[in-house]
Amino acid sequence: MAQYGSEVVSNYSKPKPFEKKIAPAKTVAEAARETQVLREVDVIVVGGGPGGVAAAVSAARYGAKTILLERYGHLGGMATGGLVNIIPNLGDIYGTHHIGGFCQELIDRLAARGAACFPDKADWGKGEAAVVGKYLEANMMHFYIRKNKDGEYIVLYTAVIDPEVGKDELNTMVSEAGAELLLHTWVTAPIMEGNTVKGVIVETKSGRQALLGKVVIDSTGDGDLLPGTGVETVDFMEPGSRIAQFGFVYWVCNVDLKKYDAFKKSEPEKFEETNKSIFSMGGSPFFSRGLLDRHDGVVWIHQLIGSLHQTDPEEMTYIDVTTRSKSVRSWELMRKHMPGFENSFIMLSAPQLGTSGGRRIVGEYYLTAKDMDTDTPFDDTIAIFADNDRGDLSLQHPRTFVPYRALIPKGTEGLLVACRAFSADHDFSEFFNLIPHCMCFGQAAGAAAAIAVADGVGVRDVDFAKLRSELLKHGAILP
Image (cartoon, rainbow, N blue to C red; front, side, top):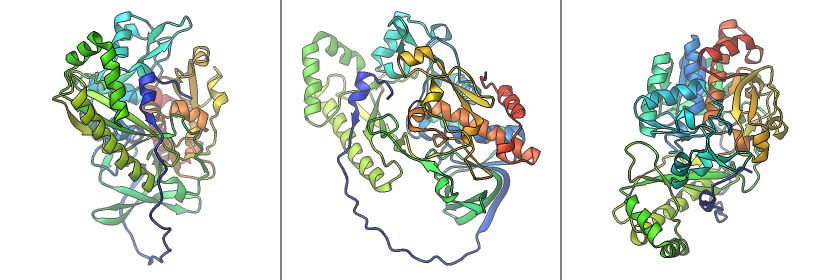
């Protein structure tokens, strides 16, 4: 199980069981229909989250006629709409940078706009007291601080981004690459010809339409296309694990943090009593301090709610309603009882309920826990991930490798996966299905799809030397 800072764990809760109120529906017969084909392209990318944008940009840059479909009115998925704007584990405990490519390009572009924040490179893997203290005070230990072999706190390379500027920058990257973008488009089913995916069915305000493509990339996060393709999937999640939970995020602004700090320092006993009182009245006093420039007085609250059914709309509704109620209650109690919060207000809450787990494919290679305890890369390695969250094992094995085959579902043609539904067991997914990891999956899947189209081969027959060359060309860090 992933290690958490104590205050982050305190935000974890297991929801009370909910009762299904909608009875199983009777079946109805739908009339056969002719569906208008909206586009015919080389590559269809379904889902505009971190993996989907990376996939679309990567495919288009290689020259493939590419379209990116997204159900919301913005790109970025959890990194923007979910307010999970923390891009963690870009480097390992020893300060080595592992995730480059599209992910690093996005961070660089946002940093140039004053919309990204991260430790100076000179501090990665080091334990400068002032730097360590900054992230401890912000209650960001889980994302920025680890212990080295001597038990000393050191700083990781982790970034935070401005989600609103991020949405704009992602639009720009897609446009510059030459990919077409279609927002407000809900993909409802794959179009199958035998075991080959030939396109997708979408629903929009214009009605039901179809798109045809030579390769389809599922970047939905939850693997929404997979049930209709016949792909074998697994969805086991261990109760209490990181991936077995929803995230509900909101930001509170106009907080007088100087007053809060003064109260905490000058009256520690009363401060603790206030925290306990807020807890006893059904609230939570924990928060993280916004690290972005010009975010003085802004605090971030990341609530984690246990769930083993992250694609069940009834449970999602139950958690959204109950957690929103608790969020507002927590803020009201903080405003009333905690010095510094008197004039605060809820700035915004995430329009997307955060999901961490869900269905995963059984691919041409199935990653398991043993793959985290090896220092040997795969012949078809498409990404190196920093292994920071397993204590002593991370110190022994600071790098984990991912093969291209983990993006290819067994038995299905014309389909790649570029999201947390990649081929892996629970233990591997627990550590390596975060935002930067999905960007790596997307960059590799997009390039592979474009190469497959250009060479007239299936996705499982892509020339890996070409794929590796394309990834390196755009900044990926490979063995």
